[in-house]
Length: 338
Image (tube, rainbow, N blue to C red; front, top):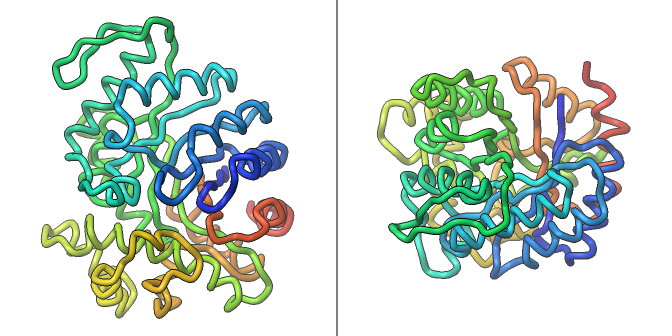
């Protein structure tokens, strides 16, 4: 099983680079950087510092969007990061969450994400392309890099299956994982692709600690964010495929999600101690986080492996000692997996 990490919610750019260096040395596959201009340091500055200090690990957003950065600006930025890192960058893209909400917009239609993927690939390759009818071409970039789509609902999972090189699938519950992977497979089939041609990263929060109750408090807020997005994009919708997902969730979780959606606060997005996350049950948190003693964490990962998961990306937004956490995970948890 491969592992990656996601950072940037509360770190300075220099701190983020140091965590990335440690993750590189420990063998993690990627380090992603949050994109939320009202809440965090600039993701591309963090990424550039990380690129300069690492040698192997892959670097990208998780995730940026087509609103706050014009696609040509975004493509040029990522081509520069790719050059700086020696070919280790990837574009992590999605419809938009807190970054979009906090500048007064709603997420782009998924059709625009589809167009963006095509535009991005052409622009970084130095080909003639256009955006919203305006022709353009990079004067220097002649490369390529993977596109990883951030998803929540059935439609975005299918889009990833059709057009992306990889996909982030928030949720660390085996049933949520199976449901999302099935939607990715549907999209891949529509495009005549094999699902195995995509890197599929299950994604959620991590906190390894001998006291399970203590650990739960550090992943609570990220679980709230993932639950809010899953409610908004899938569980609250009436299509049969979404009803199938809702029916499979642990008892009471759907009602919790509905109440959470009514009180979610963007200014406390993924922040430890967020008011909207205060009363969430362990059942809901378990859907989106792996936490507690090493043996419990290893057992949760083994359950994911049984349904085909071979890559997990851990967010560390609520973790005080991120280097200590990623080190302990490799030493005390990853070694228990076969």
